[in-house]
Picture 1 (cartoon, one colour):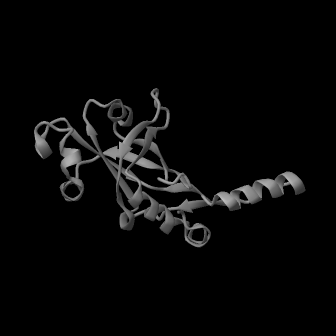
Picture 2 (picture 1 turned 90 degrees about the vertical axis):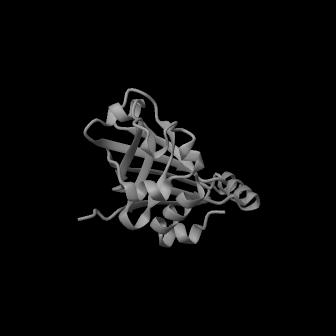
Length: 169
């Protein structure tokens, strides 16, 4: 269940907490001809970064080229948290990060393991995100819907916040 008080007071902390619980989202590049594609992320909150591992031949790699602006969309497991984050993305291999994220699931995609010539890492420096946190309490949701229908106005079922990430020097 998403913490609505945290969404109001510290949406950035909520964002990172939710990313710990979600295994994948949808990644795309501005101007990309193809649709966003599912990707698993590795979060580095202290650096304000997301990392992805993919294949050299993936369409998104060619779309990134020497660098681009990406959007990453995540939905919480309980469907009470949604976020869309954006920032520059580039192809960049970092062995320290690869050590942290390497596991049997990642390994299963690469025939030659960590040294597979097809393995590519994508580094996304987060600049901003919009987050939506909503209640998953059915009674509260029903009450807000009924109240809005009877009295007018919109139901109050959650919080929307904009996050600006610090740019690393």
